[in-house]
Image (cartoon, rainbow, N blue to C red; front, side, top):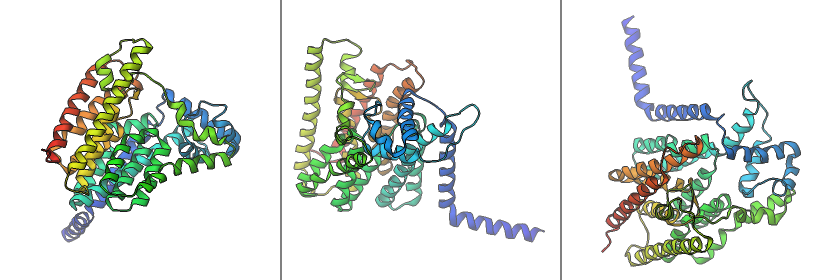
Length: 402
C-alpha cells in the first residue's frame, strides 16, 4: 500500500512541477469566469439602452440595421452594433426570476471576451519584456481581477475594454516594426470608441521619431468607414452609421470623471459664456502638454523607444488628456489603468500608480453602479492630480530628462 501511495505522490508532484504554469492559468481563468457569471444579472441604465438595440435585431433580424439609428437612441458605431447583431442570433435561455437573462448575458459577453483578450496581450508584452513566464502570468491575472476591468464589462456591460485592446495591439505591432498592422488596429480601436483619440498624440510623436511614413495615418479612418459601409449594406443609412460619434458630443466641465476641470470648478453652475471660456482654457492646456511631450521626444537621442518606454508614454497620454480635458466621463481612465498595470509589472517600484488610478476611478464607478454619493468627486479629482504629479516625476526619471 505504501508503495502505491509513494508512486502516486511522485507522479502527482512531478506532474504539478512540470505543468504548474498551465494549472495556474486554468485556475485563474476558471475563477475569472466564475466571478463574472455571478454578476451577469446586474442591470444599469446603460443596459436598457443596449437592450433596446438588441431587441430591434431580435424583432427584425439583419433588417434591424435599417431601424437601429433612426428609431432608437443608438450612438455607437457599426463596429459595436455589428457584434451586437451577431450575439442576438444566439439561442434564448432564462431562469424563473430572470426572464431576460439571455439578453443581458449576450450584451455583456461582447465586452467580457475582451477582458481576456487584454489579459492575453498583457501576458505577451510582459513575457516579451522580461522573459519570465510566472511574471507574465501574474500580469495576466492582475488584468482579469482588476476592479476597473471587472466592473466595466461584467457589472456595467461597457465596451471600453474593446478599444483599449486594439490600442495595445497597435502599439505592440509598432514595437515589432509592423506599421501596417499597427495603424489598422489603431483604426479599429478608433472605430469602436472615440476615446482612442487619447493615444493619437503618441502616434504623432512616433511619426516624428521616424517610426512610420505619414501615409500610414490614412489607414486610421478606414476601419470605421468599412464598418459604416457594412452597416449600410444591411439597411442602415451610411451617414447615420458614419457620423454616429457626433451623437456622443456634449460640453460640460465633467460628466462624473475625477478631472482637473472638476477639481477647479466643482459643482459650480457657470453661465454658458464662462463655461465656454474655461472649457477652451482646459483644451488649450491639454494641447500645451501634448506640445511639451512632442518637444521632449524630439530632444531624446534614441529614435526608437524601448518597450517599457513605449508603455510609459502610452500611460502618460491616456492619463493626461482625459485628466485635463472637459466633458470627460467616469470610464475614460480605463486605458490608463491598463497601461499602469502593465508598466508596474515592468517597473515594480511604480506598483502604486495603478492602485491610485484604480482607487479614484473605482469610486466613481461605485457611485454610478450603486447610486451612491458616498465618495466626493472633488477628493477623487485631487487624488488624480497627485497621481499626475507622480507620473510626471516617473516620466522625468525614466527618460533621464535634463
